[in-house]
Amino acid sequence: GENVEQHPSTLSVQEGDSAVIKCTYSDSASNYFPWYKQELGKGPQLIIDIRSNVGEKKDQRIAVTLNKTAKHFSLHITETQPEDSAVYFCAASKINSGYALNFGKGTSLLVTP
Amino acid sequence: DVKVTQSSRYLVKRTGEKVFLECVQDMDHENMFWYRQDPGLGLRLIYFSYDVKMKEKGDIPEGYSVSREKKERFSLILESASTNQTSMYLCASSTPGTHPYEQYFGPGTRLTVT
Image 1 (tube, rainbow over the protein chains, first blue to last red):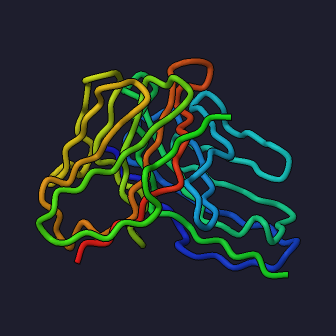
Image 2: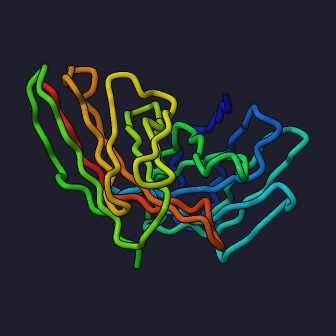
């Protein structure tokens, strides 16, 4: 089955700096890669996703890049703010495989003022 | 807004008890999922369902069963709770459509088995 590795497990940055979280996947047939943000006491929420026919996608301060050859994808958050502090999960799936997601183990991001 | 609700935020049960975790979504979603979340292990899929009375095993189904008698409700059952099932349980739903893979999560149930 699919194995998704996520690094780092914890990340601390100063407000205004950039944060990068990286994931690798094992199944070359995976073609959908979402990122979820989980705030304290809440369930995860989708923040951005990318499909394998696209190399990069951006939404305001967040962006995701995908390297299919190397089987890795990354989340980039620029101009970090304290409210970006949360746990972030990457995931991988195969479209038309049944909508189930394989999640990474998560990254706890702390943005200090 | 999609709303996924879970019956309890916190639950304490004894070893050997039968435990029911209930999840209800109000958006007529076809797909529903149960995950458990443990520190350092991320989210692991227990069971999922594509339709009423349909169920599929996820990565860690042992010790669990599920029931989906109505489209909006997906129940996770621990037949005989054990201490290693102490965890945060998250329910999610999704629908085939313009964004079929976006899963909407409930707030979670923190289950402690003593």
